[in-house]
Length: 202
Image (cartoon, rainbow, N blue to C red; front, side, top):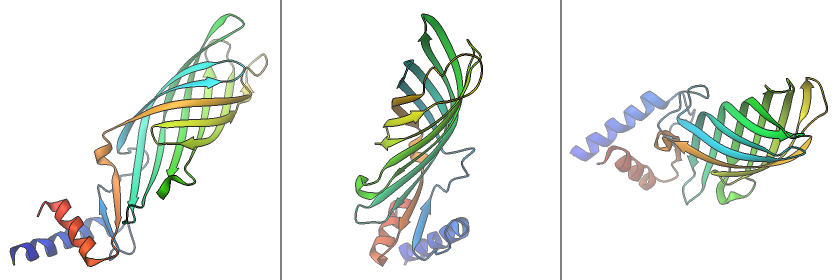
């Protein structure tokens, strides 16, 4: 009787705090509901090398909003949206170049890893030669590592486009991943009970 009472109370708490996250609360269990993209739920660190007309080394830091959906039977989808800032170093005509960037990034990893992709856009300012660039990128991801193709559009500043077509390899780290939002699809009463016991340690 005690376990039954606690389970019913847990159901009520889940409905109370998560009813605005899913319209069909009878089929979904939500843990660690995200507060939004701006605040996020994880800190993002990344190091990258951009191979183009001018090779560039880059370090990034930002905030990520990680949302994972468990459709049961081992089918898990991950969507991560990140924003942040980067600093980069390159050389051109024998001169050191220092660049600051703002970026937006979204990765999608569907079940079974078919169709996993990463979209990213950077806006950069070269502090050395005063050039500015807009760089959209598209590629494949394994969550902790990306391979992207990009094209850099020069939007301001003197001189020629130092990048144009390029490829980027990026290695990433997400701190505090335990705070990621999890959405569990409940397809059987037994599965629901198992997640309730796991959540509340019954």
